[in-house]
Image (tube, rainbow, N blue to C red; front, side, top):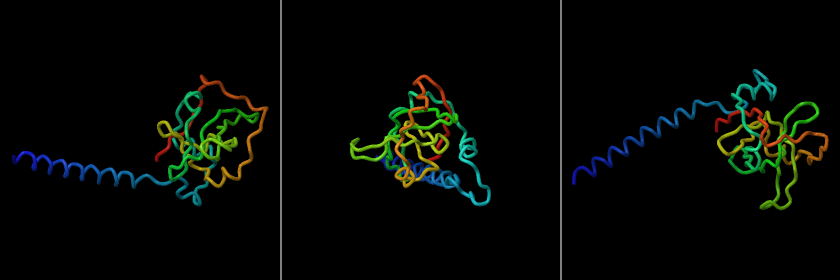
Length: 155
């Protein structure tokens, strides 16, 4: 009879200690753009600082792109390489339950991957709304088995 309250008490203490460690470790991670005024960086430099990893293009298709509040901005429709050799994610932005979306080109440098989601790190939602609709027919659509580099997200 005494073993149950003791075990429950130990679980509560363990969970409390673990939760406090997680919170303190999370607080040490600086937010995106911190100290940007002191040391301005290009989007390419920021991407390199985020430990870019290889990923198959086919694995990116259909992934949601999230903003800072974990709201879905859109889903990746395709990945293209422009004539200036820049990689862009074509995101179906806006709409309501898939209706009324429009294609927006998002530079790979402003995106970070976090599991099976993409985080919009350096492109706020208002820039998606202002971005022109993607209509470039000259850009090369990358095949699903192609490999590109994408930054890691810390969220």
